[in-house]
Length: 136
Image (tube, rainbow, N blue to C red):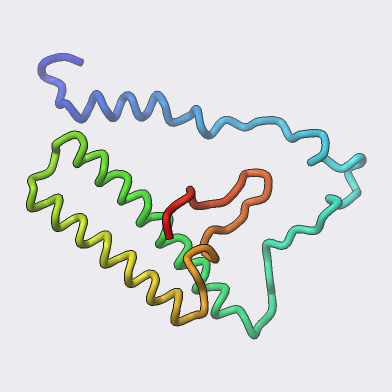
């Protein structure tokens, strides 16, 4: 990084260099591949529930899951900024209050549709759960 290069440019370059790592494709494990190309997997996928009576609740669950994922990412980013000293005390307070209000509203919406925060942590099979462990 040269003296003329903005400080954030170096961070962008580091992020760009590190980005491909998590997205590398790994070969499937032998138990994940059917013996022949025409066989179906041993356990049917339970990803799609087409019951018309639950479609609204399922859609809300998906949307709230995405909102919770984004909220957790924002919370982590905020903590990094606080640790780096990038925020004033007032900004830290406002950010903390905003994240708490968002979490409370998310809980309220879950309650309205008969969901819990644990319900939003979708199981992705061999990949584990979508959301990282959190204190609900």
